[in-house]
Image 1 (tube, rainbow, N blue to C red):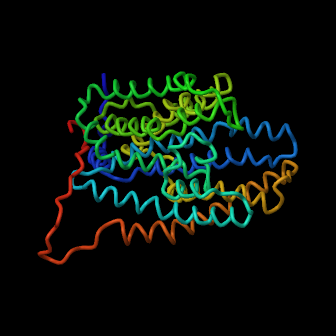
Image 2 (tube, helix red, strand yellow; image 1 turned 90 degrees about the vertical axis):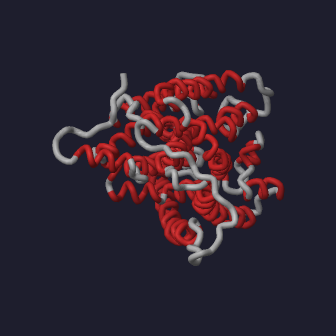
Image 3 (tube, rainbow, N blue to C red; image 1 turned 90 degrees about the horizontal axis):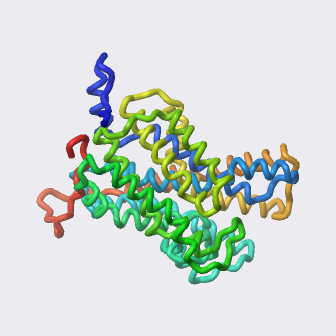
Length: 402
């Protein structure tokens, strides 16, 4: 039995719902982005060993030690969801790719050059091959942890996103053809594959191990980094968008969805390490995204929709790209081996967060927005100008019945 997303009978609710289903903006999901970026920030902060007290450091790591894996998984599923939600039949493959390049590459290039300069300043070995792979967003295709995290360590996820964007037109065309009644079966199939990936990874070479957990580089790469594997998260997001649009979401609210996410977040403390990277949170992350989109369709009030949260969500991409550089280099600046008592350590992390936010604000306002306005769309051609190639349209992803 399915429940169609409809408004309450009173007032102009139904018209509001229809308008929301056709809207390209989902403010609750935008607000969630800064929460996910914050989780990744504090996850990496835990590895800076800022706390002199072992107890405080252990508590901090216990709270945020799952944040990076969960935050990145959220972004991957969200990417497929929002791109599908905003896709329109008048769009073209060429126009889509152009917008995606303008959206991510200028920000990547700025933070890449900054990271490269800081590595030169610190006299750290770089390696030309790794630097070039990072520059062209190919680093995630290597099982070497040193290659994946070269120059700007977090940019490996953009290497995955590049594959997502390349495949999106074809994936959307395929998934749009799926009968609505079978959407949940396909979603369940993707989740099942994600859940067995840790088991499959056990067949890979048993060394060398990564420094942060009981897992080999090969296992870590297959389960967490490999772009074709993380394409599963992205594809799941596409299907979930169709589920919500077709009215087949079972209307689990934001509060219980976040409750399930907390349970999934804590599960890694009792499960094998390889399962904590993606498997334990893939389902609750999906529920939170669907619940947030449904709340936006209905116009449900939420702190996620406030102006502050939406603005923070808008700059969250820049926050993600800057934060690792700020954390590691700020620590290096004051002494890479230093640690502080708990209040001072908290203060240092807040300073790092403030610096990250200021740099992100500048990157968003001075690079991301101007580039999108200037180059994400082709200039209007003079009347009568010929179009040399007929662009291929993206498939429609309308509301129920599409």
